[in-house]
Amino acid sequence: MVDRRESERSAWFVFWVFLRLGLTSFGGPVAHLGYFHSEFVERRRWLSEQSYADLVALCQFLPGPASSQVGMAIGLLRSGYKGAFAAWLGFTLPSAIVLILFALGVGLYGHAMPVGVLQGLKIVAVAVVAQAVWGMARQLCPDAVRVTLMVAACCAVLWLPFTFVQVIVIAFAALLGMVVCKASTKGPTEALLIPVTRRAGVRWLVLFVVLLIGLPLLALLHSSVLLSMTDAFYRAGALVFGGGHVVLPLLQADMVPTGLVSNETFLAGYGAAQAVPGPLFTFAAFLGASLQGPITGWWGGLIVVVVIFVPSFLLVVGALPFWEQLRRNQHAQSALMGVNAAVVGVLVAALYDPVWTSAIHTSRDFAVALVALVALMVWKLPPWLVVLGTGGLVGVFAMV
Image 1 (tube, helix red, strand yellow):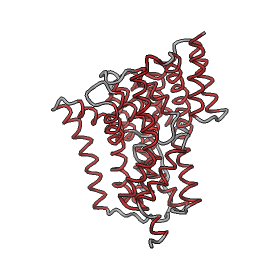
Image 2: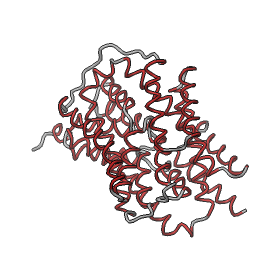
Image 3: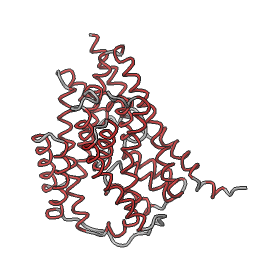
């Protein structure tokens, strides 16, 4: 008979635990981290308070979706590489399936959907991104230096609306951060028992860099929709600091101007993504299923949702063996402070264009967006309820 403790360390058990979380974890990345703390620190005691705090700190330091990366790290510590995959699959699968189904529904029956519903989804995206901007600005830009970096990044992205500019802005902010931001490092902390050697960590990080550089080159050399799509979603997953909301400008710059997805569909899907549990990065599944090209539907959605999370996996398993050394490096911490400030600026730019410019056309639109923002920030209503309410409210307005 298999010992209960041994069975709870199996990848299959990890999958079922994270699947339940993937079905019930509404509220965005901060709420997800709260669910994880309750489940794995307080209830199951898989981690101590200190170990969990260290994992959260590492995943906030890395680009990518912090809550999903924390989940992968917990799965890795519990059951090795299989556990990391099981944790990601369980947490991601429910929202990915729902968003693919929504994309297929919009494609088949979008003409029959009341005009106000899609407009309502675009308006609620304004409220959601505004809430994210406010929360991130309060946390990541608490002083004049970082507010200045935020504004400069926002202006640069708005004045030069090219995808590569966002990458340059973030890289430049890291260099400035090392000069103008003063970080403090903590003393000794509890050591994590990491099932990845430093040599293996280097290999995973090298693979991350090879794909980041190699995929754009392959996409240039070979005219392939699959390669271009893979490059766009891998790059988005690799270069996003600050969580799922920041993926919006990167994906919009790659998907909409090329005609792969219309701007209306893009923002409607982003609004719908707020109403489902699990990570916001599964918005990629909606885009993949909505693509105007040879790869679309279920295959498109499943391919891109895997691709956008690959950088997160490579970074987590590559960086974990070096975390103790990295977290004590003052220059690295200062660079991260600059990057985080620039990320807020990029998100402010995205709030204006495309989110605001595509959704707010009349004073009535503004009024609905304001009510949705108050519902999220003041009344503390769950995002899924705000999404449904906004869609219904705008639908009623459209019939008046």
